[in-house]
Image (tube, rainbow, N blue to C red; front, side, top):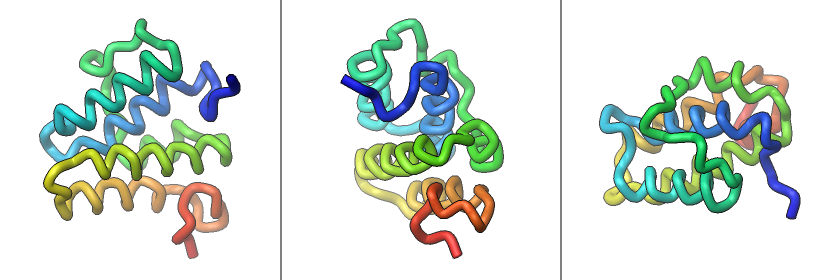
Length: 115
C-alpha cells in the first residue's frame, strides 16, 4: 500500500506533528498514542522514538515539509491529532492553525485558508 508520506519524510513530519500537539505539555497521552500508532503501525518506523525526537515549531515546520502533497497530508494529520485533545483548548486550535500559516501565501497546498 502506498503511503501518503514517503519514507524519507517520516521523521521530519513526525517532528512537525509533535510540534503541532505541544501546547506546553508535550501533547496529551491520547495524542501521543495516536502519533505512535501512525509511526509504528502505518509508517513502520518503530526505530523512531517520539520521546527522543525534538518537536518543530511552526516556523521550522514550513522549512521541514517542502513537498506540496506532504504539506496537505500533514495538515490533515494535524487536524486528526488536534481532535484527540480532550477537552479541546483554544491553545491547541491556535497551535495547529499557526503551523500552515508559516508557508508562503502563494502556496495553497499547505492550508485551504491561505489568502
